[in-house]
Image (cartoon, rainbow, N blue to C red; front, side, top):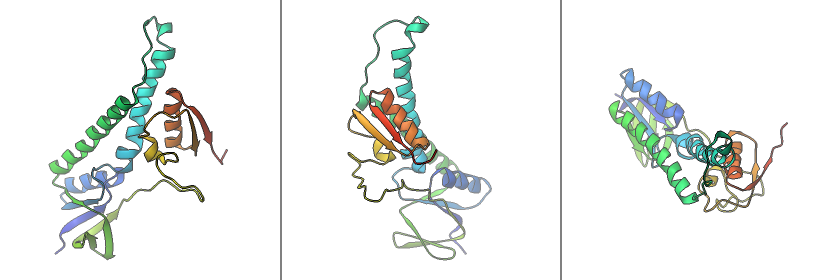
Length: 202
């Protein structure tokens, strides 16, 4: 008999939602995730943290440009980048801890580590093999690399690195006009950076 009805590899929006639904339908369910927190790219280093920074920078923009027209007078706020990053991290923490709560509530096992599927119906994590009647692969994606460009996550960063820069840069070039690139470009532009977006497609 298999250890689980379903093992899901990856705890991002595809994986954790599938896991919760499987458990609600009475299936013994486990999720394999190597990150320290659940939620995948979206909750940890994608949609949620970028939206938190977008919200904070939007509030700054409103206060600096539109409050006077609404009759709201006073000194414009200044940016405390470290506090803004703390706010972003707190928003992420609330969301990821919410998923942990849902896993406990629905009796979903979180197998911490990286998965290998050595044969049908088996998932190996850190030399321990777990069996399942069904395996769902929901591993998500990684930022694309560019030939000849070395990413050091300090001066040349992926979207992940852009969420936690040491300071707001004076100038920023965003390669790719996708959602995350434009969101983060908007954040830094509102905070005073000179932002240029480079996009191949029309």
